[in-house]
Length: 301
Image (cartoon, rainbow, N blue to C red):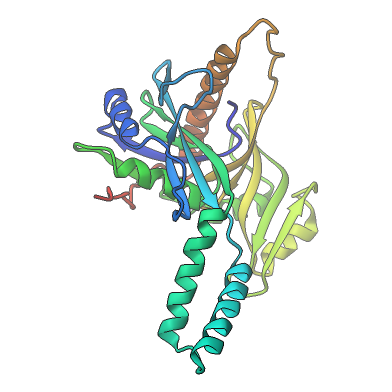
């Protein structure tokens, strides 16, 4: 499992034992007939039954989310058809309350027939570094996984969003404008420029970020809110203003040993991913003024 994204949080007060206890409380169960969505923990690798895979002080978990596909247009159309039948039977128009009841009944009946769409979100706890890393750039998926964990974790623990003392976008903008990235970093061929006073965004891909045209956009009031970079010729990524790493690429990977089994490959890739996230966290902190904990994730009890 080579992570392609990394949303990083810091944690204290969570151990392998408390983590295993927490995920065991909320195993995944399929959607019931009237459920629109169902979330729970599943084995991070199909080759094992355990809900936690621990490798070298790194504990991997996985959340499965099944959401039923129920297009709004289908609900609206079916509600209209049924309300029309009621009007014909009653001889007068359907009121707001009755229309709402008809719609609720339609949703319940359609949910029972709807197909569920499944997605898996993996994450790992790095107990050496005190980091929780979610392999997703989607804030919705990250929040769903954290929310599920917080409902199960007991004891005195803290999860904190990763924030730095220096505003990331201000540094991105400066690096692009001066063509001077920090030591051990290089600027790649992708960026997102935003005008905060209106005017939308400009997405730059497969282009030389150091072009004068791009610098002129910055001089005219745009700031860089996403920037593609490579660190120490080891791995590349796109870093967002919210300190989310996207499109992670690993440089110089050796070919897999054809004799390695699925579990061994999974373990090796987890260690590689965890090391990269740990290095990125440390290196980015060093050029953005260090960590400031300003947003605690409260347990939902």
